[in-house]
Length: 381
Image (tube, rainbow, N blue to C red; front, side):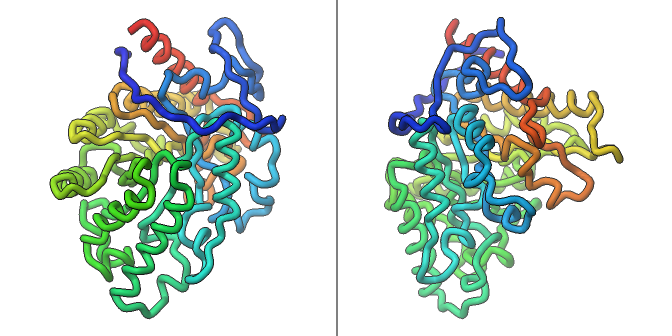
């Protein structure tokens, strides 16, 4: 892997002295091996990463978790929180900042869980990715079923963005402003996206402008799935971004979710795709990486399946590390215990880097070792 340049990341305030959340830093050592459940200082992803490169995870909660037979993971699972704080330098609310969770009624916001995540990040010297402001999914019934004029709907969106982004101004590093606005053919979602359907495509630019006004320091991103390769969907984003930049719209980044499956080949042109957005002057990021697989009847993957999964994780990380402006890499949860995959993909699972009981898989070590290698190259370079 060639040496790479990384932008400096300004981390949050110093950690508070809570034993559960305290984070120690240490230089990784290749001479020591941790136990499968260890979170030793020398064996953490965040410690292995090159300076300025953040390694993140989604914070489980909200959404489908509300329908599962366990209490809220972030609130109640102490072991989960311990790993969350020790292993990662960036966190993304999985559902807790989406419209249906944070804005359940027109005149009421629920900031409880979002506030708790932001505070947790401060204590653990982590940055936060905000997710998400304009999306066609997980909107509350009052919004989707409401009878609003165009003027009212526009005011609702502006007020939401101003309120939410403004509340966390200076505390959130990156925002997914517009999420999944194109279909796989590269066409705007003019039917299922309430904002584009009712207000027209220009509302996307306005969302970026309003977010920038609410927090001029935050980096503002487009975010989507199935855009890892150069294809019709990513082409549509590339054309849109060029147009918005020409208009002076404050678009700062493009991110690929990277929900991958071993059913399909790895997107081998991921690096090339990130590079073409980098060439536009954008930051890039991998924001929601997981690698699901078809499990045998036993529910236990074969060693070959685990190796293939580890290879996908490693190649996604290598692609990001190879692009100068790609300095944020997030996996969509770290334990299968709280994975969204089995809920939405029947027969598939085992998608994360740790098992239900937090034992590390080959995928975890693939990420750790790749980060260590990149860190050493940066030191030499």
